[in-house]
Image (cartoon, rainbow, N blue to C red):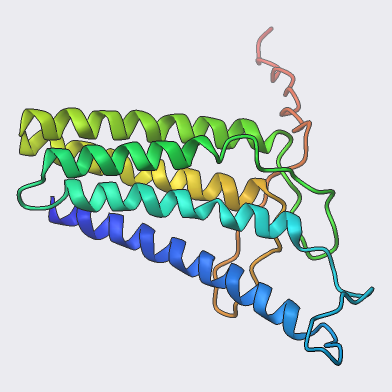
Length: 204
């Protein structure tokens, strides 16, 4: 159970990093815009449109709500009312995620979006909601084994949601030195193996 809690906190840390990246990107973009004599920032024609990327990054707030519920459920003696309230808050936040990912056209230096990013996000959200329901049921039953199982299942479900948002929203390719390379998907259609003719049998 303690392992599951550490995994949940690790997902929350990754999410906070993504949110910090989004906030920093906004600050940098504003800092690069010219300032008028009155102190107001005036739009510059050369500033790139980051609204689509920021819209995707803003959805990670829902992931934080989910990890809040997971952390509360992973307490030594989880309080049912607290867990239920946090789960309801998380599910309300998840409801706003579906339908908000609009994949832009692929650009140089950007990852190509999946064919239907919203379908992937919707699938991931549904899986997380199911896990949250199971978590409430486990806490209601006061069954530590079921709570541990629900938390264990929650971690990959949340990771899938994070991945669907990161890979399905047309976000820029990560450029931090030292990050491992991401796997590439072979182009479709994948060629089938060429059939090998039967070898001749001696004596026939």
